[in-house]
Length: 291
Image (cartoon, rainbow, N blue to C red):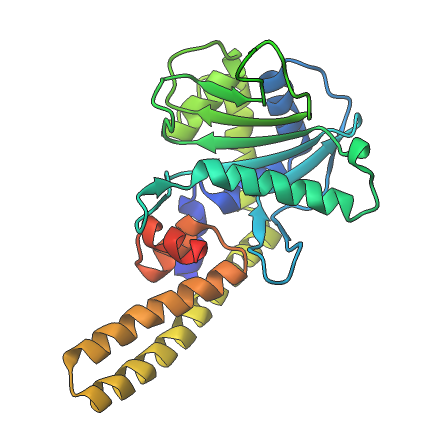
């Protein structure tokens, strides 16, 4: 048990589990949104933290770190992205189409609640990235749909996607957002705001409910790994005996890891956590997810 507790103590803001719990502190989350969007927000409501949306039974579910609505009925989805996932089979980066899928699922989920098309809420999908996906050194990359023939014409579907590049050096952000980037990158506290974030993290880590939740999460992952390990070894040994080849055991171990990854994906765990749990690379987990 002590090992699992110490794992929580080592988590930083870039970890999905801790990021979610910090963003559940309304004052912090609201301030970040106001600083990013340069607007005043009266209040925010949490729609469901780490919510998994399964619109159709055969479709991929998506796990949302934090989903929020403000008093103007604008919806926000905040995500922490530590690594830049790529499909090893195709060599294509997955993040752009992931945002497309997130947007589609958010909209479909709203329509399922009886809204007409014109009642769809404005949405912001915001990724905190610890890498520069577009390699232009911008601190923030904001995307809206525009006409290629006349870039002054905006589609005005009220859907915005933002990539926050914590390593960026171009473009203006508020001092508090820059200090947040610094804190995410290196745990550097250089503002009252990041001091508040750091103090909040200490408070969260000392919260018995959070510690219990994290231990449960760790034990659940271990149980799934052990179960998949037993199944994979049995299958690999059977195949090895049938074929009389060493490749059988190797394939069994590979199937064990794949089975574990699929189980953890079905639970909505992050690709990064699954990679750590299975010793697969992030690219391999992304490829399994894309199947």
